[in-house]
Image (cartoon, rainbow, N blue to C red):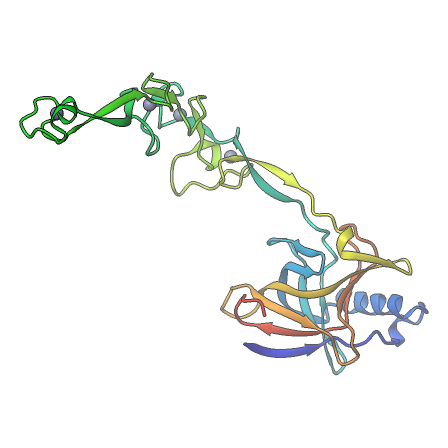
Length: 288
Ligand SMILES: [Zn+2]
Ligand SMILES: [Zn+2]
Ligand SMILES: [Zn+2]
Ligand SMILES: [Zn+2]
């Protein structure tokens, strides 16, 4: 459901930025002046930007977006400098070394073979098949008074457990035999209410840093960088009671221009301005 429609104004000449001659330069300076004078109302924080090249994920470290007091116009723009695209983190299979504690699933890295439906439960042997009882071979049907099969007609064939190779014990799958497990809590705490380990963010696994390249999302144009066209943004509202991310879809404006973000450069701290496009704010995060 659309709740409001807001238009981005065109880049126009501004008396306040008389020094620059390029309209984009003027726009950047004009917007920077508004932000420096605090002539805006913050309304949300950008969590994700969707372009045709994919997603730029800021998580909770994205730039604030606000309504500028820009004459009669309701200009929407970033009211903070471009933060750059932060690295993303993915979990590895390795235990986090910062929140280790004694593994509670095993003794010195070894545990009974009872992990999973194919395990032997510690016996070292498990059923591998069935064979007909001798009573069936002679009578062609089971003998109800057979002392070997008790009338079942077949006998279970036992074999070595494939998982533990007949030992009945396995290397602990939780700690991988190290006898230490990562709890994901600060300093390896096992308290449910303890704060998350800051190194693994609570995952209990070593994290792998994945850089988010900005290059696929931008085009250099006249010494500036144009990020877009932006298809939409995930925005966390900064006003109101509901703190649920909103999906802001962007379409072309009446002049046929898509929503873009003009950046002076792509490194963190760059001056930025939004340009073009029509934004529709949706209450749910469902993407149109
Ligand atoms: Zn039998
Ligand atoms: Zn086993
Ligand atoms: Zn263990
Ligand atoms: Zn950790």
